[in-house]
Image (cartoon, rainbow, N blue to C red):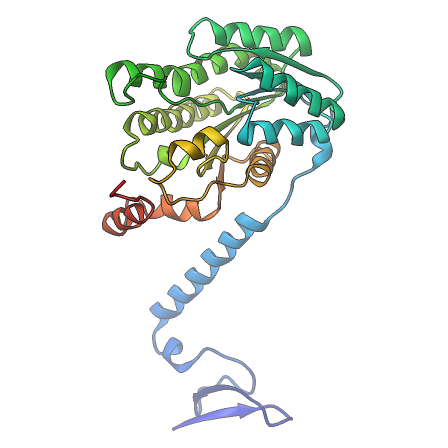
Length: 322
């Protein structure tokens, strides 16, 4: 026989078996009391859900922590890099900006000064040259006296006239999108160690989920994830207090990037200011991972579990006929 308890207003609270011994009030449904294993699954899923929401919605970011911070930012002339520079300027950080095109850098530097950055310097640099990373880091150290943040954001596509999947194009991409990151980190790490600073690496979903027609670029991004993941563990073992934040972003909204996939990719570009703020929050709170948009985290988790649905989803983002 199944009955139910009622409140004083006559509103039913819960159904249960008569004589269950629970007394008036709320208790587990009959299906859960009869199956302890199922009850444990419900508890586990509830706990995981609570952790998931706490992870994504916890906000311990203190903007004041970036006031006076010494920041070296690469790829600062456009897209997310430009928005990063503006956010750091508003927060009162001291900046050294670098990118390939000097005219664009000068414009960003002028805007940063208007936004209140106490110090802003720039150095035009082509990361395809192996001698450049050391020169850039030394310039930043000379101008700022040390580093609290190294934000690696620059990226490159194969030069005009070079096939992206050729040996020459792949070598160029690896130098710009991976090896220069390693060189910059190597030269800046002593200063970051002294300041107990942070290393922020702006990467891509393609470093976790490879897609069609992007093999050299994906190779560089996978290398970033592996290298800096291993480096973080080495620093932990050596008790070196330098945080590494890996940022997984979608398609950046710089004009050259959007134009390069026009008609091929259906993916919408990430909004620069919002993506940049997510990167800054992650670096300031010393988070190990940042995903923007957040759904990319779920896609990365499902990558190994559901290979066929993953392939289906990826095909939906491509105009295969193009």
